[in-house]
Image (cartoon, rainbow, N blue to C red; front, side):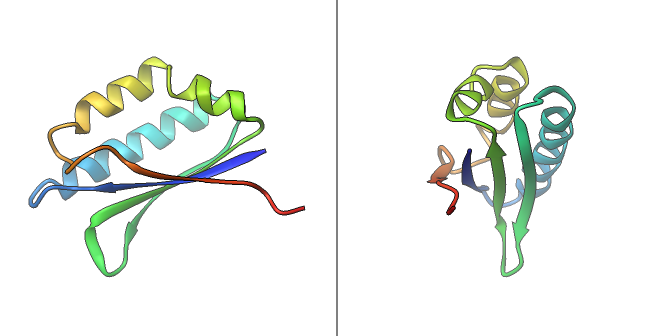
Length: 96
């Protein structure tokens, strides 16, 4: 099991574009990626320019596969000019 938090920082005025793309991405991931157990986008309550995506996969390789899928690549292309840079990603290990 592997989890992560990805933080996207939007450029001013681009919050809605990135939020819509993140919601669409989440819908696609939930439908098409069986090894993804959680994929939920959130907006920071105190900073609407920050979007957090919580993800959980059955195994590390599923995350690697996720990053190669057409819908992931399309998402990155859609938001590339609307964010300040690449997502800040923190990988998480489940406590057992």
